[in-house]
Length: 317
Image 1 (cartoon, rainbow, N blue to C red):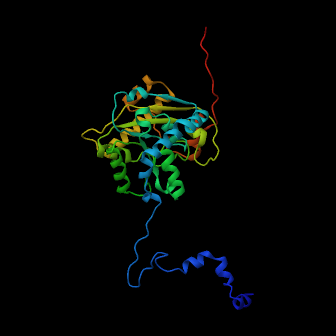
Image 2 (cartoon, one colour):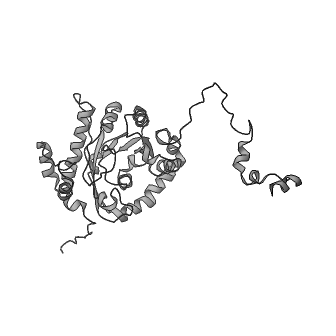
Image 3 (cartoon, rainbow, N blue to C red):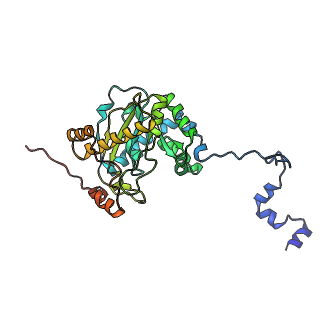
């Protein structure tokens, strides 16, 4: 067949069926020039991970699209799945300028829940610190994360000052930051030890840290589950914190974790008793007992079980 095609002047069959091969045969300037021998090639330009450029997502058109998503389908979905009970927003009265919001982390639902719970002065000018290896692994996921939740890539597998400097520059430009100091979702329902990112950025930029405790999102969409299960949740905002003169990033980060633990105690009991335990330093920790896996699951109790029934208490007439 190829001999007949050659006799009548037709191109060879592989060239017809392989446009990639035909493109590779083109020469400069129709394709990129090759590197001459003896010259070191330029490093490849990375466009994923921590190198993903999110500047376009903070321009006005993208911000308008994101605001429409947050106030529309995201708020509707959060209301239907989580029925959030929001508390402590009055503790933010009088605050102005950018804020670092630091919350515990149990579920992918945490970010939409917080984006629809943060008060209006900051809600539409906040960026979310997101793991570069998970949310920016490809250009598609990076684009969606930047547009929908305003995410910026943060390196969590190693110490990387470029991510911290990017976040600090955005804070200096007036953007607030939502960060999960645990570095990832809880694997078993208990919290994890806070890392020092929020404390370091607060000390570097001079802005306050608002601790937030989230409860119930693990029942809806915990790590390892693909389908959500409706339940009830609570979002408790704490009082703003700033590092004292004798506190470094490590001590301040530990104080942020203690405040989130006190908010968890407040959500499960009441404000007065929770503040008494916080003052005495006896608030239950976020990380749970240091014991075997089955004992930790047993100690978790009702928080690890299925969705709670939503009940409405009618007033007595």
